[in-house]
Each structure stands twice: as structure tokens, then as C-alpha cells.
Amino acid sequence: MVKMAVKLMRAVQYDSYGGGAAGLKHVEVPVPTPDKDEVLLKLEATSLNPLDLRFQNGVNRPFVTRKFPVIPGTDVAGEVVEVGSSVVTFKAGDKVVAILNLLIGGGLAEYAVAKESLTVPRPENVSAAEGACLPIAALTAHKALVDIAGIKLDGSGPRMNILVTAASGGVGHYAVQLAKLGNTHVTGTCGARNIEFVKSLGADEVLDYKTPEGATLKSPSGQKYDAVVHCSKDIPWSRFEPNLSDSGKVIDLTPGPSAICTYVFQKLTFSKKQLLPFILIPKGDKELNLLVRLVKEGKFKTVVDSKHPLSKAQDAWAKIIDGHATGKIIVEQ
Image (cartoon, rainbow, N blue to C red; front, side, top):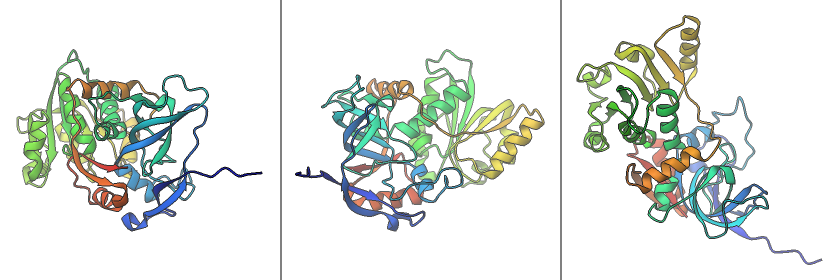
């Protein structure tokens, strides 16, 4: 019997927890085969998220054991080259945006498989880099603002005051823009070098978090916040609480043990002001389709901090570790 030659692809992977950028290795592995409900993509761009680094550092270890080696990266854009037997939405040659399985990844490679249900068409005027930036970061901002804070993106909702911490980062720069599509007054926090950038996104007020005034999180106009999209770390509840309206919410996107304890205590004491830990679990393509359409229509933009070839993926990983990117970090295949 003649064995079929296995097609190989370039990929970047790690084979243990920890290790940072130095833990990433360049390898050649077989091109994956799509299941019946999946599409095989030739990748053009992958965006990195702090969540990728948290997975490498074992944040999921108490709950889910990862199978090594791991090819990281979940947010991708590319071209469909093969479809599973039950796929009806896509065909070979379609340009798409997709979010890969959060626990398996696969984005730092030349090819990857994605569920049909988590893949959306990419219009011609939306670049691969713009599309790849959207899944986790923009979906997180959308769900925090729409599903939890209750903002109406068509501006029909009640007037709300919103605070976005780390407003120049991946999730933050999306949250400012999405909030401004609603009927909101937005205050953002960032470092001094990004103040004008955050204003350009539509923020009404911007706080330099390194100044004494900025550290208090108090709105310069004295308004209390109805909701906070909390994208940074290490800000205690005690700093948020005096700046919240009577039923204000802090939506914590990077919750640690103390956030969970605060949440439980507030539930037990029926507190109107709430700290709400948030974890994104993508379930379908509706919101991602909406976000791609907003980019297409020019109502919403992706800001790319830097682009790196797959051969220099370690450089992109180091920028994620540094934690001071303005917008999103892209690896191009």
C-alpha cells in the first residue's frame, strides 16, 4: 500500500506551562483536517490577546488540563480552502474571520480549523488584520456594554455614564467606540502618551492613571458612573465604589480571587452597587457578524499596534507580555 504524503505547515507552539516568549518554538506539523462542521482556513492574520499569555501561564490549569504541545492564538482571518461535509455557509475561496477553540488554539500557524458557527464572512473592504483583531477583544467589549451594562448601540437607550479603564488597549479601544455608538458619556483611563489617541476614539474625558487625580478614577466633570468596563488589573473595589451611581456596575474582565470574593459578598448583602466578574464564552456568530459590519460601514475601527511575521512570533508575544500595546498586536502568516 502506498502511503499518502502528509502535507506539513509552519507553526509556533509551546510544550509546557510558562516560558514566555522563549517558550515558543518554530516547528513543522501536519495541516489539520476539518471535522464535518468545520472549515479549514489558510490563515492571513492572527491577533494575540492577553488571554493567550494567561493560558500559557496555566490560568486554566485548575479546571481544564491542556494537551501539549499547544499552538496558541484564537482570533484569525484567512481564506477557506476546505469545508466539512455538513458545512453549508462557506465554500473554498471565501474570505472569513473566525474565533478558534479557546482551549485548543491553533492561530500561530499557516492553516487552522474553525467551527462554521464561529466563522463569519469578511467583506472586501475589511482587511485580514482588521478582521483578526475583532473576535475576543471586540466581542468582550460588546457583551460587557450591551448584555451587562444595557447600552443600545443605536442610541435609543437612556443616557449613561461609562468608565473604561486601560482605554487604549485591545478591549478598551473597542469599548470606547462601542459605548459612543450608544447614548453615553465616556471617561477613559490611559497613560499620558495615549491621551490624544483615546480622545480620538470618542472619549469625552480622559484620565492619566499615573497622576494622583487619575488614580482616584473620579470623572473630571463629577459624574457618577453607571457602568465600568474594567480592562486593567489591580484596582481595588474601594477605588471604584465612591465613583459609582446608586446601582453602578464594575464589569471586571480580568477577575482574580478578590473579585470573586467581593462579588459573593455583594450578593449576600444585596448590594445595589456590584462588581461583576466577566468571562467570554463565544456561542455563535451573530455578534461577530455585527462587529464586522460596523467596521465595513466605517462606524467602528480596529487600531493595530504592530504587525509581525510568523517567523518573528516571539517578538509579538513579548509585546503582549509588556502589556502596553496601543490597540492590537498582529502576526501575519
